[in-house]
Amino acid sequence: MCDTSKPKSKFKLALLCTTIPGFAIIAVFAIAVGIFGFHGLFTVTSEGERMYIEDVEGLSYTAIIEKEFFAARLAARNMIIDTEPDNLQTHSQSLAAAQKALDDNIKKLTEAVKRQPQRRAMAKELKKAADTYFQNIFLVVDPAMANRKAEVWRNVTNGVLADAVTAFNKASSGLNDSMTNSAEERAEEIEFMSWRVQMVIILLVFMTVLAAACSIFGIAILAVNK
View 1: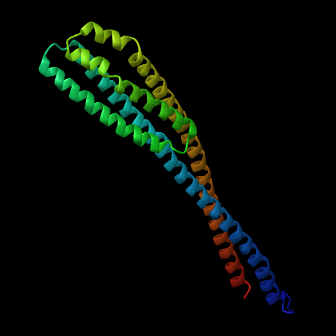
View 2 (view 1 turned 60 degrees about the horizontal axis):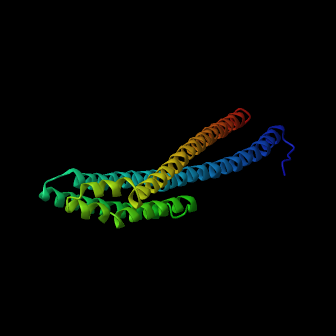
View 3 (view 1 turned 90 degrees about the vertical axis):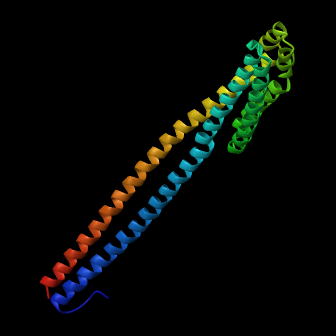
């Protein structure tokens, strides 16, 4: 009980009965703010990891896939225009190397977007277009090796190879747009959550200073009223 017959003792007890609940309220509020801040930091970290895996890594894989597909088409083009037999074999090896690198990165891309149905479908279309292109690349390689240039140009500009290139570019563009837009949106969300965490930290510091000031004030009052 906060009751006594002595005035000074009564004042001290009244001060304690007033300050202790106030400190308790501040402590509870500080704990709640701290939990909120910890959750905010965890969310920022989690979103940052998701953005890296699903957007940044995905974009890097798509960029490599596009580069290797271009390298394959360039090797096919060189096989058409090059007249040196020895060089044709070199271009054929470049084509095979590009195909292997492209396949490896399509697997990585598929893994990166496996939790996102829309991107997974686009990655599947990308792989289908690339597979179609390489499955029919003999329409370029065989006549090129036989020096049937007119037939090669006809096969490149029309038919299954041209359709595969169009399908590949469409899927690649869709993936790039999806991941770029997602990365921008997540960056804005992370920026906002970071701002909230900063405000929580500032509030927590303010409450700590307030609690310290109240403690000093209470001690000073008790010292004066000994």
